[in-house]
Length: 230
Image 1 (cartoon, rainbow, N blue to C red):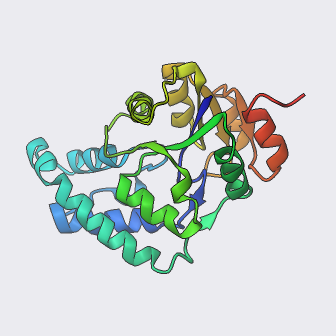
Image 2 (cartoon, one colour; image 1 turned 90 degrees about the vertical axis):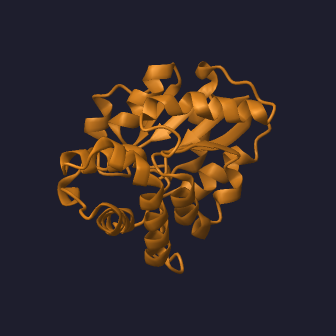
């Protein structure tokens, strides 16, 4: 059995700027400033890292950042839910729904998430797609600020379901160099998909095991992910 861990933003869906806008409002409400959020690079960062980086740069005391981060996330979730609204702002990337459903239906696969989003944010973004129930395990951006520690957390949660995965039986699928780095750091299979803001040639320089422009060719993608391609 293999564990497939998907990133969310840029890989599964785009919410067209709702996450950044919700963060800006939450940071201003909680800490009195959103810092340099307009030029901060969100790609591949965990939500904990985003708060820490922006507020540290803005001069907020480290203890104040830690003590109020839960308040910040509550404000963020409230604002994100408002911005997502009826879900029409959420756009699935090509082929994603069919790839996830195909993998989730296989007896030799467990499908999960490895995302920089906190759990509540992930749920808000994915609920409109109908895919949320298919992700059986997850490691979130509220579990650790360092994305490289999330695969171990996902393994622990899979173990609680009765599945014991070594890192070489994990495939991490994402749209940024940090997703590839995360997989490389633990010995997982690294799959890059150029549906986010990093083009294929840039992702290729990171040396992923598989690189897709998008996941639209569902039969080919599933075959390659499950090592069944000729």
